Amino acid sequence: MILDIVTYPDPRLKEVCVPVQDITEEIRQLAADMLETMYDAPGVGLAAPQVGRNIRMLVMDAGVQEDKKQPRVLINPQLTLEGEKIISKQEGCLSVPYNYRADVPRYERVHLRALDLDGNVIDEELSDFAAIIVQHECDHLDGLLFIDHIGRLRRSLYDNKVKKCLKRKHAE
Ligand code: ZN
Image 1: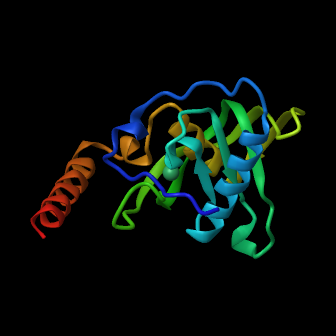
Image 2 (image 1 turned 90 degrees about the vertical axis):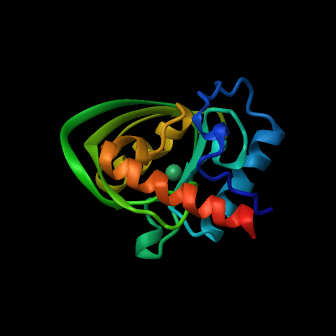
């Protein structure tokens, strides 16, 4: 089932999410729905708060760009940021409207610990595109968006645009 995606400035995107306690059938179904929603959008990552669920869970696929699907579900992910800072070019987000994109500083590598849908421990190093996606998605679980990393001037220009568009919508 394709889920509705929550968009900025919805306050639900600013909440810190709570850990998943049990990997229930409902969690498995949510993961399947989130993957379907992500591929449909299309996007390379989707976090639970983006579909209105305040829990620490995300789906991602760093392989879709090469046309090979590598779906991943991460439950209660924890990152250790490693290596140099790099620039993630023209990052975007399914929850940031008007297809806004900006360059965002990220770390080139992360150490990831999480659970998969079977409750197995994931403990691995990610680099390049996968590292950028997982940093972006884990930010969502802490109530952060990539536009929280772009500097005040660009952020206020974007916020003004959003305000104007929302006003126009309400006036219609
Ligand atoms: Zn996002």
